Length: 218
Ligand code: TYD
Image (cartoon, rainbow, N blue to C red; front, side, top):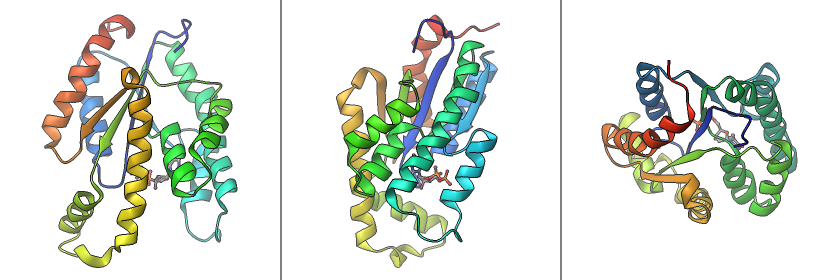
């Protein structure tokens, strides 16, 4: 974060079924109650152009999207998001709470789609003008646990998912953990298999000292 910004940029990352939405809502509620101005947003999306890109990459019916096109679309959505939404909010002193950011591209496009983690990190460094979160929370979930959880939610349809899917999820998981291990001061890895309330406590404990210095509470 550069000096011109008074806000805080917090990102939540993790695989399917890790409970990002639950944690984002708990955090937003807690922060708002403390008088912190929260700008909650998500990727891909977060701006009018980003939401259109989101529809292009996530909705079916556009045919197969090749990996490089996909990586560039996510990066384009992110560039707009940084310039039009995240930086202005940080300059206003808000706490930006974002569902996914660069790490998702490194994991899904870099590792998952085989474009290379370093290439995707470099592309996104350019797209974001190097804007790095103050804290990235990785909700770490074992692929098998995630699958079991989803099955429970879907009413016992556990074995619909192939083991190939678990292997893919494991590679995404490793990508998130590698990024976190490289910069532990900027990451918090939490076990997403724990109870939501317990996970929330861990995130709060890490955020609390950061709030005192940066975010203006009325
Ligand atoms: P979304 O419906 O937001 O689901 P989730 O709750 O998992 O975040 O879908 C976002 C999907 O886009 C998700 O499968 C991850 C993928 N994605 C990428 O592949 N690259 C990216 O850079 C981002 C931000 C998301």
